[in-house]
Length: 99
Image (cartoon, rainbow, N blue to C red; front, side, top):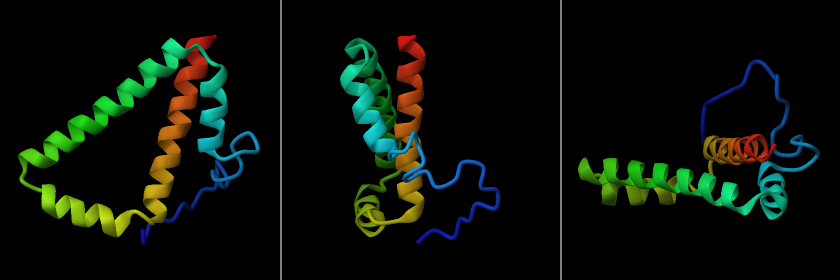
């Protein structure tokens, strides 16, 4: 588990304080009603970043080691927070571009 602690509680608990919903549920709700071209473009940006990260790791011959690390950190508070941040960023980008 992560040793990260948030000393300033500016944002509260992101899991259930994002417009009264989780970041994931907020994203899926907004993605259904937003301009689909914008949603698709924003998802493509996220997937391209993932592809770049994967290529960088493969170039460093970390693929097998990485797979083992992924299996160990699937359930991890820091990863949960980072995943929530990705959803929050997606919502922000989509809402901003749909205005």
